[in-house]
Image 1 (tube, rainbow, N blue to C red):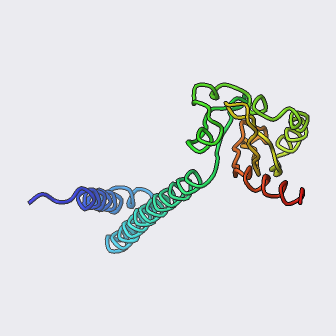
Image 2: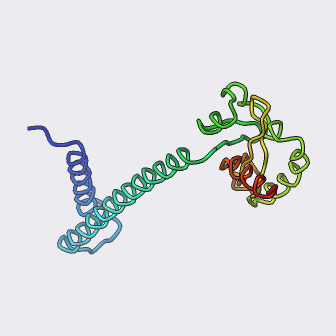
Image 3: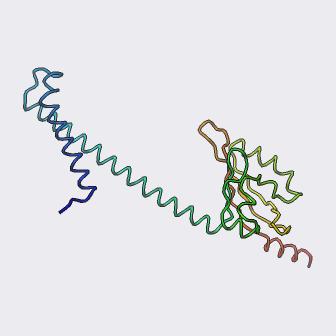
Length: 196
């Protein structure tokens, strides 16, 4: 019967650790710790083996925690993509990703967006806000507010937008992630209520 891969790997690690501990007690301990009795060397090698086993178990626990966290994060990201209009830009400021909701709301095809600047799709009255948004992002701060996008059909799409900078370890902006909600219908209802 073949041993499962994880158990086999653990057994090999423990055998290697035991061999290392035995080598320590037989070869290294007498050289580096002269006068150490065989019993003391065996106790020391047993402690060494216990330490190696603890390190292995800790490593495995950390790896399992990271794997669980990554799976949870992927589910959270999937939920965000299902609900919101999401886009990202690279260091050049051009779209490098737009989700299916962005395409559905604006009517554009992916090829029409990727490689283009997001503000080129802003409503003309919102173009002037672009520099203000960049100032927030360059300071490492998120910007939140209403922005109008121009759809592929020329219509206006009102969005509640949050734009977050992606920063490198030196504090330099390397891109953005934008999360938007379509509020066009809400704005239309507010406009009609104000007319009454």
